[in-house]
Length: 119
Image (cartoon, rainbow, N blue to C red; front, side, top):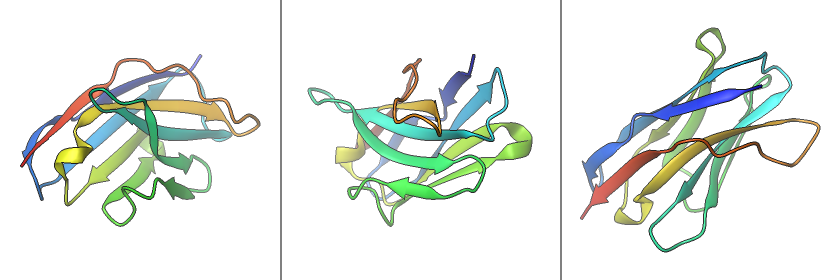
């Protein structure tokens, strides 16, 4: 069973940068997609970015395109989210999730990592 642990959150000023990490264990991921999701206070959870573990192909929500970059290090079984030009509206609890490429259904949420952006 795939297990994911997100880390790297913190408090940053608007315009700053953070890099989140998601350490994966419990299997091989060549046939998986990994993704980042977030939940802001008072809002529903939303998709942020994803990556095909095998090909490296990425996908982004419109709200983060051009500012966030999703990547992975196969040797370390770790996915990253480089967040630049952060805005106060990026403040949220960020989660990483996984799904087999054969299904559109994402796995469990796990614990998240808090990102807070001050204006």
